[in-house]
Length: 279
Image (tube, rainbow, N blue to C red; front, side, top):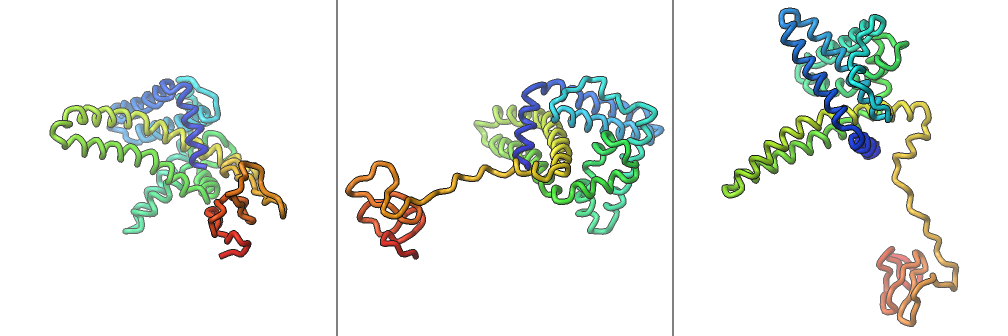
């Protein structure tokens, strides 16, 4: 599933990367301005952050599904009938993640685990208004069962690859005669990574929600994630040899049909003795 999602994310980014990056940047800027403008009322800034997080999640989901949104879609949750539902559900999720992290020692593990458990909450709140705000995390917990490890692997590949590139460039920058060019490359990699990794991670997260919904609706849908099976080998009939460049100095394994020199005692492919017995 992870490789399938990454393939679709790559195709999505090839179409309109600047639009998605601009919307993501605008959302971050609005959150930053809200934190400054409402520094005396942090609850308002927190609520705006939750709303914008939900709208960005929906935008990424639509982009993953092939429908590219507009900038105005960033403000679509600011409707009277949807705003309390979204803010309440997101705040309820944040509260429970915070409570799990308060558990001594175990909270260091349970907190991140619950982040993946409740990861589908914003998509559920934005696409399924029939689900109550306080029940969205329960629905997310059920639907992420069996997929949390894959979601963690996807995040590890995205952020781990970026960190690995930075560490490699940082190490090369320590070489005296390579210091200047690799410092420049390090700065470029840091800026590009900071701009692209949240975008890729957001699309991958939306991809998991979309693929999980397909799998829940049709269990046979997950068959597309399996690698194609190799064609089954049909051994030649007794007394026949496979078609090919057969010669006087060539013999064929009676089990797998692999060609071998006349002097060979064993098949290099399956290890069968060429007199018909097996090891």
